[in-house]
Length: 283
Ligand code: NAP
Image 1: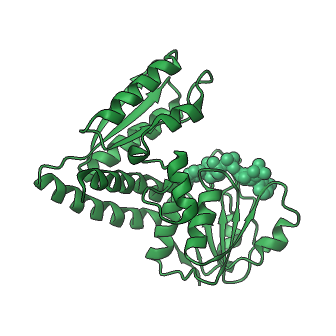
Image 2: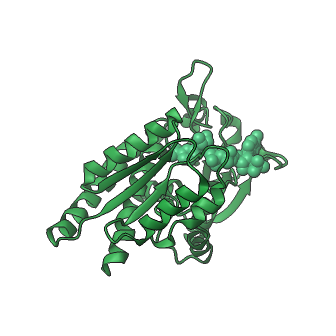
Image 3: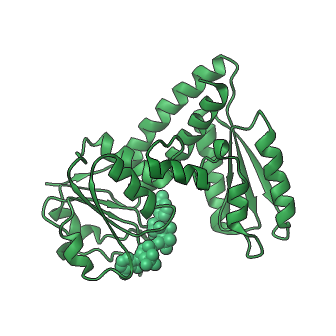
């Protein structure tokens, strides 16, 4: 019988711990605040930003929204980021992606101070991940690591196969699994014999963005399967990269979609904001 890795429950536990720490800091007059920048009126971005503000309120972190019109110039956005970088009362900064087409997204993300970069997208933080001394971690891979820890899933010495090599999920995921002494294989769209490789995985992490592409014949009996994907199926229902019904009975543990990695990603943003604040407070 397989275990369902419950991201919702684990995220609640993470948030409870964060709330306790935030309160302790508050009691010592150390308030924590996150600045959330949103440019334009992308409906999905609006939902994400609203959720982030709700999550902040839940744990006692102050959130300040900076909603800028779609025709904001790159210079204006960079000036705002510069101001937020300087402000002592702002501990974390995030700029909701995607930005409207006329922005140089890389330049915008690089302008955020690495100490306040709660998405951990800045090259300085990416570099820290590479050398294994990271403080701020990209939220989704960090959430996956928390889930594996919460369910006592051993990592050292096991073969972890990651499908996807994006800068925000696949690549940092590989680094975090390496740090925990997994043997890591990263697959992508040019990988030959994907199923032959995924069948070798003790821990299979799918971060592809293709609804239900991982089928039962691609998974080893007893594997742990982590589904990062967030897609819509043929009925517009939210689903992952893994064909859950077919794959789950073959696994020892599996994350559902929704209710798996998603809630953990949200929780880890707050964990990063707390971490950033503690460093700034000299804690
Ligand atoms: P991405 O930037 O589009 O990267 C997708 C990766 O999958 C690429 O490396 C691509 O290979 C690889 N790929 C595509 N088709 C493939 C195939 N047929 N076989 C093997 N590899 C294939 O996506 P992402 O940002 O990493 O996100 C991946 C998924 O996770 C999406 O569904 C996204 O919505 C979801 N996501 C969820 C959360 C969460 O909180 N749950 C957070 C972030 C992302 P190439 O590099 O060769 O193109």
